[in-house]
Amino acid sequence: MNRPEIKRAYDKDASASYIVIPGGKLAYKVSSIVMLVLGIVSGIVYIFLEDSMPPYLSLITKLIPNFLIAAWLMLHGLSNEKWIVFTGVVFALLCDMWMQIDRPPFTLIMGIASNLLAFVMYTVFFYRQDKEPAYKWVLPSAIVFMGLYLVLYPYLDGIIKLAVFIYSVSYILFLWRASALLAHSKKNAYVAFLGAVMIAVSDGILSFRLFYDIGHSTIYKAAIMLLWWGGIIAVSRYARETA
Image (cartoon, rainbow, N blue to C red; front, side, top):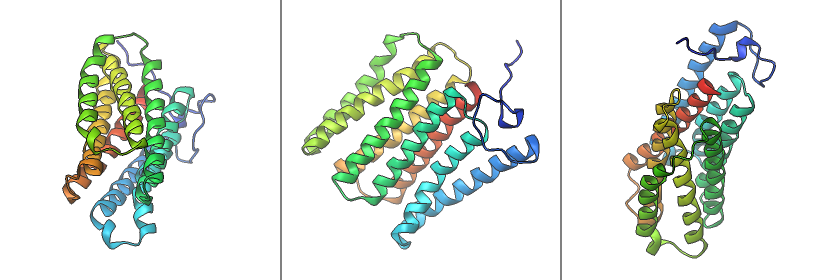
């Protein structure tokens, strides 16, 4: 079976919005590589040098990876479907901003709300790719995230309890739809599923770091951020290849 043709920005797809650069296909590939390298460098600088930089530089280096992911999506064309994931990446970018400012409880709630909206976007996108109910796939993620919520519950205060509960439900729906893609053997579904799991593990570690006080080791920080960015890249790549 022939692989379906995938529209790129250099294909001049009139139905999509994208960044136009001269040079054709090669130029877009080179641009993608440059974005990836810049994102990796910025991420490494943030992870290992945050404490030695002024706050504004820490914020900038943290935001660059998701900014470049959003730009990469636009570079390759934003169809109606890709706009959903692009919007999710923008909300994830806002989440990084609020979490970096770190003036609780306001910025924490804004960070949770921004990321919640990102999950809504990703979940809607996954659902639009596969609308089969696949109810049996709700149970595994429900067990994991409700269990996590119950473990953290004694350490949550006031409105944070409700925010984390809503957050947990959003994760259940997010992983459910990613699992449904995989279960129904949708094209490149493993990329979407892997990305969803990486994001979930990242936020799980972050939750324990925020509320359970597991410490602030650089190892935890590296795991959180690398899984987070890697998961968003995977979901974005899935969107580029399928939508």
